[in-house]
Image (cartoon, rainbow, N blue to C red; front, top):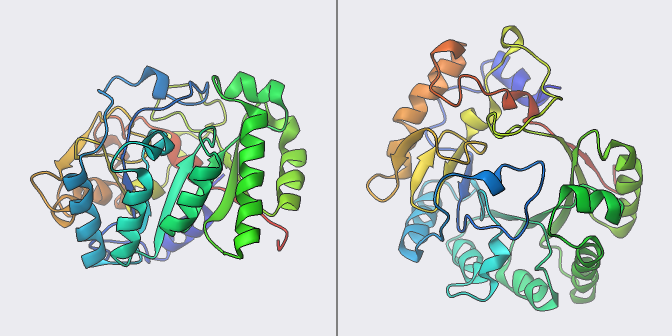
Length: 312
């Protein structure tokens, strides 16, 4: 169950306060989504949905590039960024801005329902490093129960088209990951999913379900507080809502704990302010002193994934 590498590094003292800047920054370029997935808390999100202003986005990118160009930057936190494929500035212009600033690891999450051929070519032209596509099923029947509002056959076609166009253009990026969140409803399809997408040339990511800090049920989270270890997301990542509010981590989708505001502070100030206090509580294993929703959250045990490809 554990994120074994992170847990080992923590126990050996290699995960500590020596890091003065996050290793991963998630940017809420848009908090709208076109699906209503059953394993996701988005449909019940209480915070106001919105789109990040360009000047706020560029401030985040500029500081990140100035501090560490190798920080992984996710171009989405809790929405579907391809909704921005026609709106100005487009998601492609945002990606290109980040890459032109010298960032080496710019990635995107998507459900791929909007990933038509024009969007594929725009993603390639933007120099995106990787795209992670949530599918979670091997049949239309299972897909429709999980990814409500999506079209399985369209998504499969869109992803295969992306892989085909990359081959035609002889380009390495974006690397294509297809994701499968393992649950009772789809577990029987995992093997077929892995084999099919490996054969297509994608990298398969299998990960546990999360509860979004208690917003939905996740019966796979079986460990109790006595087994708790410091959360990878709390220790390594910074999640920024479209308004500029920095929240606890990547599963605090309702912004129940706000650590700072990028409109008024630098990322470094926020990382070394309330978020540092939170990390120190994790390091000292004073979990009972954590703020909500971190204190009662069980998603620390889901911060892991298995990867499969033709080369593995």
